[in-house]
Length: 388
Image (tube, rainbow, N blue to C red; front, side, top):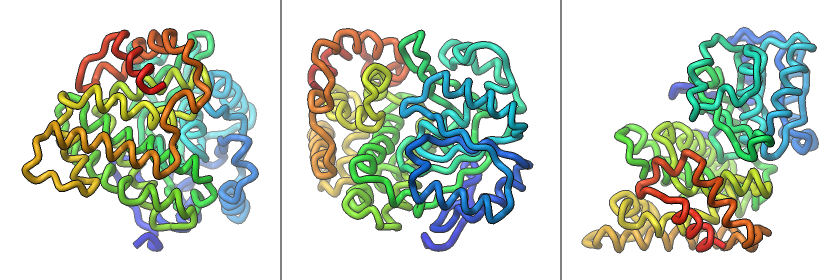
């Protein structure tokens, strides 16, 4: 199955399968892009994934411009510089190639070139999505990691240094016109990044499942994504050449992004400041904080956590939901250990003295507002302390 290239929409049109990158010229033609700005980060330029994408474009005699200045936790300056290059080089569309950072920048560029003013104008939490009326330049996404699912999402997360935090730019107009998910482009991802990005997908699915918003379709998608991560993440970490595992992790990441239109939870509120202030990889921050958040939610989310325990293969028949909830937490801790995720924030060079300030920023983050158990600033501080 994974060696047959297939297309499906939910609602983004996804071209999936080993070798799917060969469809890039067709996708450009279908979306009316004659000269794309290819957006990536400097590190990816040295990889086989970039070489394959560049070769496909060259072989098709496809004109394109290259922007490779994406920061690991993308900042407003990245979007400004890329937008300037888009205009100067006469581009009419964007290709985002890489992990969530590159794709988030690529999704923000059409907003930048269509509208004046600082990006903070478009912050979703402040109602900025109402300003994005479209149409925008078309954008294609090619993920090289299986984590954020940004390739099928309608949001872009960008750090605004002057504010000292990330903002979310949100609009259906930001959704990529095509997502090309080729597991062969992810085989070069090292084990530690495979683990971190994979746990990002897991956290997306889990927090969307437990968000107290009625959306049974997203709940089903989230459970399906969790099942895929549980079955394939460890395989992908242990053997990066496992195309089946890599492929299903790409699908799991997309399912996480589809499901979290319900919203997320406290783990993400804790993770965002860790990335902004200390450059901690987002999926890693989620993974390290998740066990403490799950313990905090053990009663409020017991029904959903019991389902997760069953996905881990735990026999929950006749077991009280609260006991199954505790077993789910243990299973996540064990999964983290097996794939090499550090167990404490201190092991990730986060100073204990920073936790107080981090808690204030986490409380400002909107994700905890849809946590299954409401959070105060003091709750978030205690979760940091438990994770430290």
